[in-house]
Image (cartoon, rainbow, N blue to C red; front, top):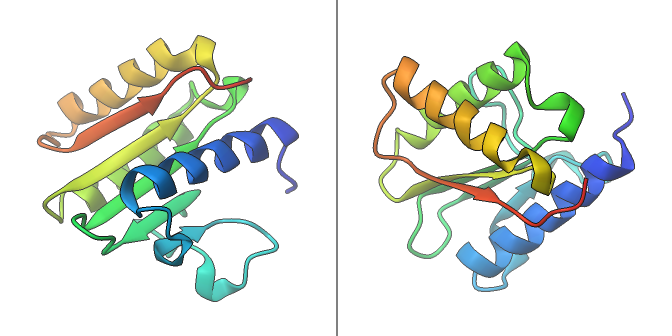
Length: 136
């Protein structure tokens, strides 16, 4: 299934933010789920789901998982299942982060979904960042 231009833009913003924030500008640590990326540069499956972005062993961090969602794709069971899986993976490491990129007017909903997943699935002590001011 082809991705929407909005989703692609959100993934690009997510990649830029993660590379700047966690990789000291070095793209060598980042794995991105893009059709034009070779398999060796795509994220591995995480409990049945492939994140949009994944960083393993960047300087000072063990795991960073990034997921982008369009306005129409955030409020559903599939997204809840994905977030739960990604939080479970992050919980395997110290100093791990889940970074969620959504359109600016869905930031509150995204935060609520992540809190719901943490509370209902007993996942604690994960640093969660929801990027705001993004297009959508």
